[in-house]
Image (cartoon, rainbow, N blue to C red; front, top):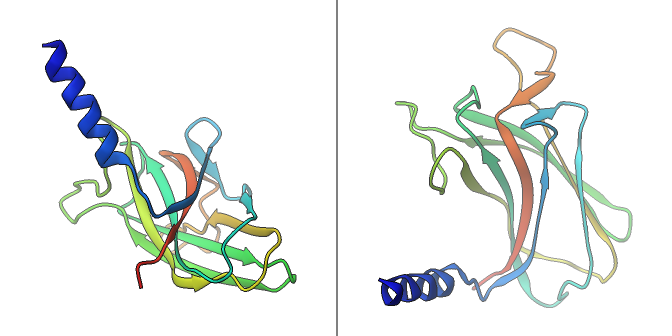
Length: 161
């Protein structure tokens, strides 16, 4: 039995490694809910300015998340001060209610495409701000507290192209 567990652990470790991963960071929400006024800030430096990269926004949710989609606003600020703001929509569940994403148990992790084949043009500090933009149908005001979002993160990987 111990041999089986050792083989399982080594296999899981090898499969979990990603040679292309450059940066990864998560921030927990307060009490498993994401306030519409809480923009989550990630800062990063030391990015290869000659390599193409893929960027992802990663969201962990539990079964209390009440929607099948997620609207986000992401703002990437370059060292020069230039900013690029995007409004993004992601599918979080299938029409039958089955959660998308990976994970066992009640938490699902969704790795969501943000930027593909991006080149960071200069060295320095980059800032990524992310906040939710969820609205109830027919409502102008945003959802004050988005329940079920436990963590928000980002990943940068080397592109294979």
